[in-house]
Image 1 (cartoon, one colour):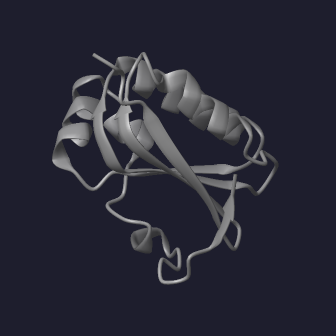
Image 2: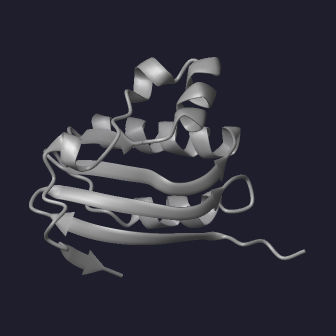
Image 3: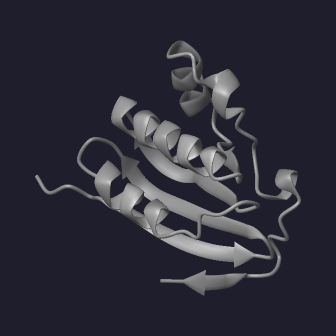
Length: 123
C-alpha cells in the first residue's frame, strides 16, 4: 500500500499567508507539511492560516506539528489561525484539550480573507 501523502497550496491574500493542506495529515506526512510551514515568512505581524478543509485524516502527530507551528508564529509576534469546517477534527481537538487553544473557524471568509481572489500562489 502506498502512502497517499499530503499536498499543499500556499496563497498570499494581503497580509494572510494561507496554507491549504490536502489529504491525510499523520505521522507519515507531517514532516512534509511542516516543511511547507517552516518556509513561510515568520515575523511580527505575520498572519499564518492553516486550512484543514481538505484534510481527510489527522492524528496526534499532526496536532503536535500544528501546536509547534502556532507557538513559533506567536513567539515571533504573528497570529495563527486554523480553518476546520468539519466536526470530526474539532472533536479530536476537544478530546486532547486543543480546541480552546486553536479556536478553529469554519472558513477563510470567516477570517475576512477574500476567497474570491485567487491570491498569489507561492511554491
